[in-house]
Image (cartoon, rainbow over all chains, first blue to last red; front, side):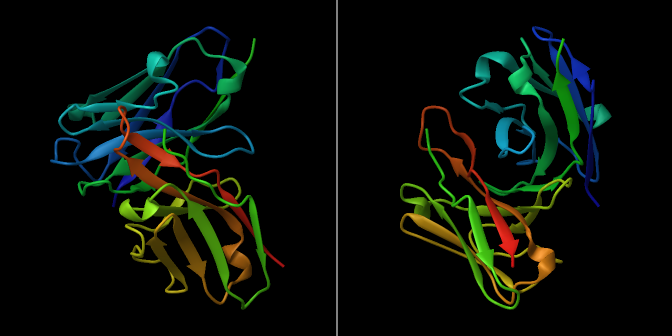
Length: 121
Length: 110
């Protein structure tokens, strides 16, 4: 059974850097084709993809947020870390991590429970 | 960048069929995935690769994809199907390939 769980601060100040950790079990990020993605959802709004890291350390970022995002993995700890710089109140959202299987153009399944991050001074 | 367009809302009476569309330029050439999200919960995959159903998803859920429109069809709609639904594709056509989500459709069961 695959599970993922997000952790990190619930409140950050404007201009600060956000660091979120996704801790997972039930799969290995060293398995060919496997990936872990980050997706966020502002309150009452749609899902927005942020970043994706693959088993081979290949990384993809949302073009609109690429300059602010960094995604890394620690295979030995079964963790993926997302950092987002220069946080702003509009970045207030629930942040999800999700497993992406080894098939080409595969879906995100399953997702973590999400963690709400509020940006406020 | 690639854009997916969904109707903001769809309403259907219990027992009837709901159809939720996802429009995109030549979306029929891409693989479309659909997620269901109930209030306060994480999204759940309900259809993948246009028309496949994960284990545990009722047969009432089906999908199709052709031309410029992908469709999620929910037959014999139940009150428990009330949720937001999102389509998603992988866009490899741009200089920066990545994941694209539609804007979501709120399904209301009357």
